[in-house]
Length: 144
Image 1 (cartoon, rainbow, N blue to C red):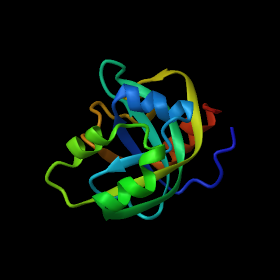
Image 2: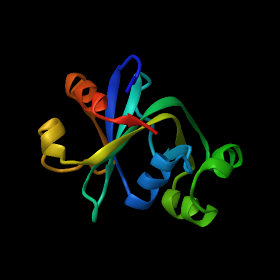
Image 3: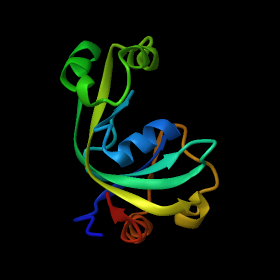
């Protein structure tokens, strides 16, 4: 798998239904309450319980922070979620961030966090991980 140049990498906790939709290509954006650093090139996808494992990754094709109506208008058609889920997620927030999903990479088998990064607890939202470990992990994945 050619993951291209790898800069900073974020490990992101995503509900299994949405993680699977990203890996299938049905969900082309990931909404977040705050942006990742501008130099993040890849996101490693940790599917939360009941999966509880790394299932894949994606190249960051860009991100935008904007008002919620503007985000939904621009990206709702490729969000892979319903509008009511979007509204529920952002509840009391006025702005949000959209991370655009670029190339997608799939793990052939679930990968434990401690196996990949020596991490024993998944991040609440996301955390940055060691780039060397991330590069090694990305090399084990296949392009979707």
